[in-house]
Amino acid sequence: MNKQDIKSYIEIGCRWGGTFVLTNEYLKMFSNIKKSVAVDIIDSPVATYCALNNESQYIKMNSQNDEFKKYMSSNYFDLIFIDGDHSYVGVRNDYETSKNSGKIFVFHDIISVACPGVVQFWNELKNNERDRFDFFEFVEQYDDVWNNTHQKFLGIGVAIKKINV
Image (cartoon, rainbow, N blue to C red):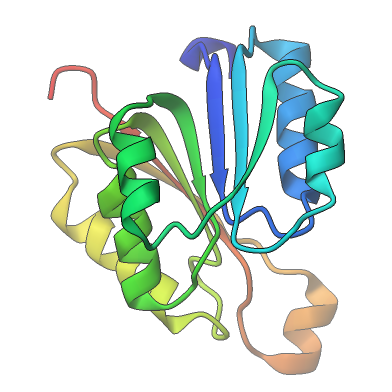
């Protein structure tokens, strides 16, 4: 993370806030985080955490509407974690809305049989944007899950904008 110099972070689709809190605390330990924002369409207990941390903010907002597009067009984040609407249209919209507002994009559920829209979008992004991004995947499965289901779940995909593009 130090190599990437992450000073700002947004999580689109924070739900209960566990990943947001973990990521924010990690960034505070190993980076000079100045701004972190959690976004979701539901009331989230992460709002309490944000109220106790000067760099953090919780915004109750639908990432699929014009208000969010306006917000993203006037903000920049070094790290954008997309984990909101898991439909193809939803994840594509979250990416399209934020693609000019960040440098590192993290996607959740990139190999999950439960989220075919995310899988499809991630694969399209990898295939169509190799000249603009370096891609990394973290897709190891728990042995018990694989042995019991013979299906893949979860997976994290990271797309980092290339410097000279």
